[in-house]
Image (cartoon, rainbow, N blue to C red; front, side):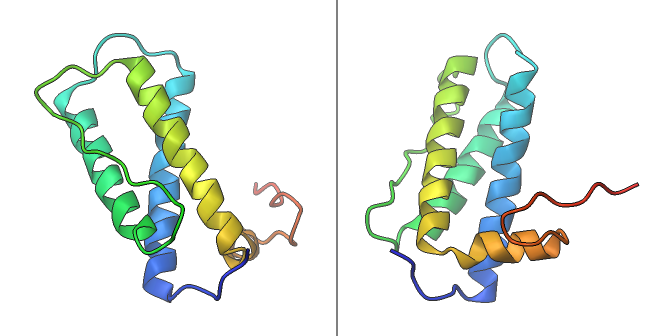
Length: 119
């Protein structure tokens, strides 16, 4: 069910969150190994805090538990976290369809089409 448009500051928060999640997903494609370092854990906790703040007023969207920085987190844990965050973002976009339209127009693409290639 589509909801009314979000206020500009919430759109900015969502755009920042989705870019950060996309960056994590991109890094995961490189097939890194080993436990995550403190910087990555801190980044994940910031993303979780942002997602919780953004999704809290929206019924049906999940809340995420913060990661204990003293316990090891594996690449599989990161894959699960980014998949859950991505799914929550897709659900958020479904509720606020104008987010997708605004992003596409900002990229210079008509709705439903990919952005043109830039030289």
